[in-house]
Length: 146
Image 1 (cartoon, rainbow, N blue to C red):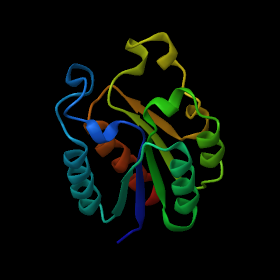
Image 2 (cartoon, helix red, strand yellow):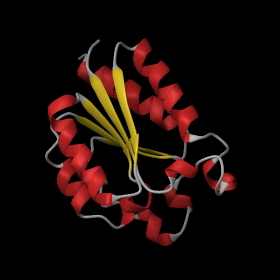
Image 3 (tube, helix red, strand yellow):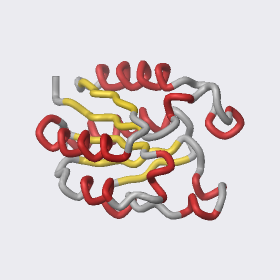
């Protein structure tokens, strides 16, 4: 294997497929994880896929990724718009980082138009649903292999 990609998910994403299906779709987080595992395996990578409702746990996982991962995909959910601890942690991770959002945050409420994370990541994918995670994995794999 070429390395591990951490995929970190924030609050309420454990309820995908059950809440606001009109915004987030019917795909569950378990289905997204399976698609990520398949995509990563096909590219020679492993994934470490996690979800939490706690901001501090996301920070701890980002710090853990510093020692274990070649890349990091993060969907910080609502923490995208309110956290300062998460971007500070992201700044310490030297691998490729991609911010992912299932919905197009720029077509939603005004407060969602700003991300505190974006200036600490290499790329942002939003509005492409679960496919955004796969695209993030593909981008990290391409960068890691170049």
